[in-house]
Structure formats: structure tokens, C-alpha cells
Amino acid sequence: MKENPVEKTNDTGGNLQAGGPVDGDVHGPDSVVFKSDRPWPNARLRVGAIIGHTTPRSVRMWFRTGSPGNFTAILYDCAEAVESSSVRRTLRARLGRVPLSAEETGAVLSASRVVAFTLSDYNRDTTHVLDVDELEPDRRYGYVLHSDADGGKVVLGHNRLRSFRTPPAREERRPFQIAMFSCHMPYDVSGMFKKRTHVGSIDTWDFLGATLRRHAANVDVVIAGGDQSYCDGVETLNIWKLLNRTMRREGGRLLPDEASMRSWYRDIYRGYWGFDGVQRVFDSYPTYMIWDDHEICDGWGSHYLSDGGPHDGLTHILPDLEERGLTRDDGRELVKRMVRAACRVYHEYQHSHNPPTADGVWDYSFDRGGAAFYVLDGRGQRNIERQSHRTLGADQFRRFEAWADGLDPAETPFMFVVSAVPVLHAKSALVAADLSFPFRQAGLGDDLRDSWEHQLHDEERVAMMEVLFRAAGRGVRPCILSGDVHVSAVFSIDDNRDRRIWQLTSSAITYHISRPLGWALRLGAADDGVTDDGYRFRRLALYTGSSYALISVDPRTQEAWFKLYGKQMVEAPTGQPGTEVVPLSHSVGKIRLF
Image 1 (tube, rainbow, N blue to C red):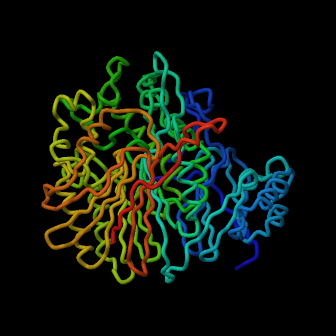
Image 2 (cartoon, rainbow, N blue to C red; image 1 turned 45 degrees about the vertical axis):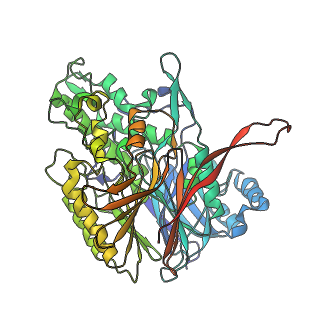
Image 3 (cartoon, helix red, strand yellow; image 1 turned 90 degrees about the horizontal axis):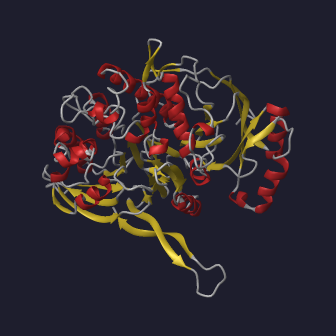
């Protein structure tokens, strides 16, 4: 390994196929830039980090710097004793002092890797991804982010230890754990006119962080399974409501423009990710992300946008089109702009630190000591108006099928397929009711069409299940990991040839507003029986509170366990001063999979 090699990279903004070229106008006429523009009840993310795709010898590190400038990421060897108070005091005392050059900082930390980069503007909302290689397997590294501003200072890693661990070498088959969560919606609104935004309980994030720290030596993968933010979560922060209020023609232009819309989506991510508990997970463990509908629009891909009939999705999304003097073509153009903006910002904040893919491709695969992972994109290609492959698209399905058929059970006995929407969850009678009057009136038709069990997805679902059962027949152990439905559950699914797959759902980690679909999905959750496709299924767990999960995998014995964590309330002993009921995390279920 070279001693303190310095690599220079430059962020020029790039050109994403899905997001279109950068036009340089990062502050359009309808942009939201300052906190005063929006009723956020919490501090938004300004400077932060995410540990992304990690291999035994490399890591993808995502940073948001908060401003343009020259920055340096400094990595240093970090033993398990890094949590000691003496190390924390050193970090605060030595690195909190300014001015301090990058070279001086590296000397304080005995740096093993130093990587410099420059952000020249705000085109990517000051986000940047570094690919750092020449690392050692199964090694814990601490890191700081240094800025040249004000004579030099550490802007991340001086007030709290930031560290991550590389996984062992591929050939080393040791037990490891996978954490999974989905659906982060911590806000509620109150007041006579529902205009005051406030934060509900986000204890589950702190519980997740504490659980990961207890198992830090073995947590190799964290799956963020969709809806990591909600662009339409509550009325006061809903950017589609903002579009509905501000869409117009002005001076011959259709507004808002796409630059303004990008600022809206960025504002959503900075608000939802501004919590310390969220950052403590993201910046410490290899986190693999995929979006679901709420990073784009509720029910995206399951609306009928071209048909003005009884299930008109465009009127559902933009009900004030006619009142604002705009045509349906105007509305469709505005929706296209919003989706392009959502794609662009999704890449900036989530996909950029996943394993690399081609432009416009959001699905990806990776492996970890005896387990192979495929993360499906069920939103970027979803189109209910397509004649076939309405969820994944034909190209993505072919990629997934080739990957699954190519797995060797001797090399990778475990297969984990991430599908944000569960393949099995609701009763067929429920999902088939999307066009019935009560569901149309409640605006739930798109939610039901989201379901893999809907008849519109029959052909694609059957083909996907056949791929999974085919792998099971070769000796691979398949598990579907999912979220979305705000109900955590475990299903076993068997065919008539003694082949089995598992579906594990963890949802939601935070969610604080009620919606009609909540009770519908709980009451409609399948229990046991035979699917329309002829598969026998059994539900082994159901939990409706905030939760997250750990999956323990032992490739040596080829065993795996699923453990779901929820929240319980514990009352302190009577008579103690300040006694009150306090929440604690606990395991609400443990199931052996293999």
C-alpha cells in the first residue's frame, strides 16, 4: 500500500440519461433553498456522509459538503477500541482546532488513505462520491472530512467518531448479518387547519443504531429498502401539493421549471435525513439503497396518465389543472419534469453510492461471503400502461434472470432479492378491487395496482417466481427482502415440487400518520393457503409497529435466521424520582429460515 497517496477528482456536474443535462440554473424561479422557505421542524442535513458499496479492498464514500470548495477525505486505521473516551477527546481537542491543514490532520490521525476532491458549484447539491481502494479486508477505518476553507478545518468526524469496517476476503466464509429497514416518514401535522409540522417518535432509528453497534463486528450489509424519504408525506411538506399551487404559464413559459423541481427534491432529502439517528446508521455501515414510490410520487407507475376516464391518474395528481388554466398536455409535461428531477436527485443522494451501473439503470447486484444480492428497481421502470413487464421492464427482468440462473450454489448458497414491494402480501380479492368505487374515492387504486398480486402483473409475477423456484431447485436458498406496506411479516412459499422460498418484510421504521391503506392492508394481509399461481404459503409473523430486522447468515453451516425488532414500553421502578414510561427496543420475533 502506498503511503498517503493523494488522488485529485473534480465534480463537473455530469450528464445523467434519466435526469438530463445540468443547465446550471440550480436556483430556478420557484426554488426552495432556505429553511425559512419550508416548515421543517428539525435541522436539515448540511454536512454528512454515507458509507456505500464496500468490498474487502474498497469503499464508495458519499459526502455532502454544504458548500463548494476543496475537500480531503482522510482515512485512518481504527481498532475496536476507538469508542474509548480518550480517542473521542483526542478527536475533539486536536481536530476541532482551527486552522488545521489537511497534512496536519493526516499526521494527527496517522492517515492510511488521503483523497482530495473539488466541488466547484452547487450542481449536485454539493454531494460527491469517492471510490477509495487499496484498503485491507476486515479492517475498521475511521475517517474525517477536511475543508480548506478558513485556513483549513475538519468539518466532519471531529465531534463524533465516523468509522466503517471492510468485509472479510471473499474466500473467508464467516457468519455475517444483514440489517434491513424501509419507509422513513417521521412527520405529522396538527392544529385546527393542520398547518403545524412536528416530529413524531424516531426512537426506532436510535434502536437500530444501538443494535448495529452491538453486532458491529458482523454487520456487513444494511439494506434501505425504499421510501427513505417522502416527497408527499405530509401536507405541509408535500412538493406535489407545491406543484399544484405554483403551476402556471408566465411570459409564455410553463412553470415551474425543472431546476426548481430539483431544489424541491433535494430539500426533501435534506429534511428527512437531518436526524442524528439516521446519520449514525448511514455513515457507519455499508448501506445499499433502492427507491420506492415516495421518492418520486405516491403510487408512481401505477397511475393511468393518458386516460381521462374514471381512473384518471393525472387529475388525481394535479387536481387544479383546469382551475390554473392549463391543459392535460401541460400537466403531463409538468409530471415528466418532476420525474426527471426525482431521478436526478435520487442519483445524487442514493444511487450514486450503490455499485456502479449504466446510465439510467437503477437495479444492481453484489455479493458478500456466500450470499448473492440483487436489488430490483420496481419504480424507475414501472408503467401500468405498458402491455407487459409493467413493474420491472423486459430489459431489467432479463438481467435479473441471467444473474439468478448463473448462481452456483457451491459458491453462493444464499440468494437475497430486494423487491421494495412484497411479492406476496394481500388477499387477491383486495388487490383486484382497485377500480371499485370505494377504492377510487379513497384514492387507493394506484396502491392496489402497486401490488405484485394484481392481475395486471400476473405474467411478470409468474415469471419472477419461476426464476426463484428454479434457483431453489438447484440448491440455492432464495429470500425476497421487501418493505413498502407498513406491515412487517415473514412468509414461506412452497411449490408442488418441495421447493421453498422466503419473503421477509420490514416496514416501517418510522411512520406517524394514518391512512386508509394502513387498515386495508392489515385486514387484508394473507395468512395461509394457496396463491392464484398454485403456491402454498404460510405467514409466520405479522407486526404492525415501527420495526427493523436483522438476518443472520452462516455460510459454513448454511443456516440463516430472521429476527425482527420492534418497540416496547418499560416503566421504571415505582418510587424513583422522574419515573416515567420509556421505550426500549426488543426482538419481537425470531424465525429460522434454513
